[in-house]
Image (cartoon, rainbow, N blue to C red; front, side, top):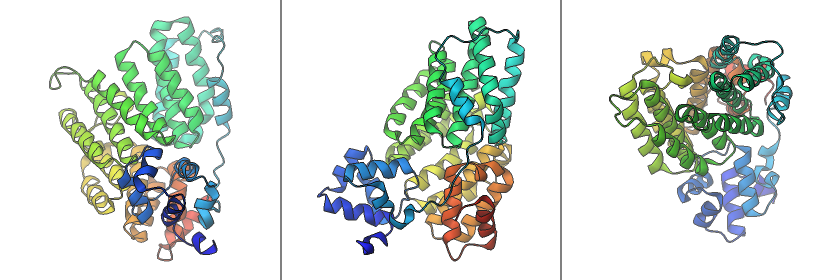
Length: 396
């Protein structure tokens, strides 16, 4: 058994699958993934970075997740959640009637708070966002209770940004609650429902429910698609395209190469109509955003070389510089995954350092990014800059 612990995690999956007498297809079916996904995991072409996915595999194989993790199971990163997360949970979990608007908050005041929350999020100031979210959420709920018509959009947007930042911080259960609240408040308004569905799709993927996410996101995309794409509002085209991108990423996470490529193709057609440099409904949608999504999808599908080509091609455009800092830093983390998968820890480390310079909180407070830093830092060929970064953020 000691020799098994020395194997890479993908080989351990293959070992225990064989012990349980399961074919790759059977394991894939039980996980809601494709056979290709299982094959790439077992061959080490596709990495297992998500704890929820490892736990799902362990459940199907009827073993403890620690057995699959082996020596990789030693904690590499401990993220101290910003203090406001607990208070955000309290506000989200309050199912009683919204408190009276005793402070006399106006719609304009809450609208300014919504704008401030989104701006701080897009600059990747996650700890600050979490600090003021409880008060902002409560204010939006009060105004919506007093003025359901004018307060509706504001409350949906506040729930959306709440879900977005909680996904970043890895607090998936509360993020799901925020996204669900956004969908509930938006019900009956096709534009608001589409906007809320963007965060719902992100939450589902983070929760390991990628198969469900594909279905939900595609339906939402086709509902908001204008009948005349050329003459339709750019804001609605952007929502439709963003939902298709999120569906493509979910398909890639499930190992469905064909569906992912097809959805990204549809999104690219819409992006060409919108162009770069816009941020309709806080989506940042455009040709550059779609091509950056191709990088993430390619990495998730195990196509490291394709991901690197798309990364190098796309980040030289003007559209790259127009994207929010959060978007650019998140992409650099995904591109670092591609280089790591391709056996190039030097460039992986370079991109992670660039990500930290672009948006420090993306590296310091996002668990998924910290894990990639730890993986690169373990490689003997890693540059000293990544070793220093790993030390500074407390990962080994």
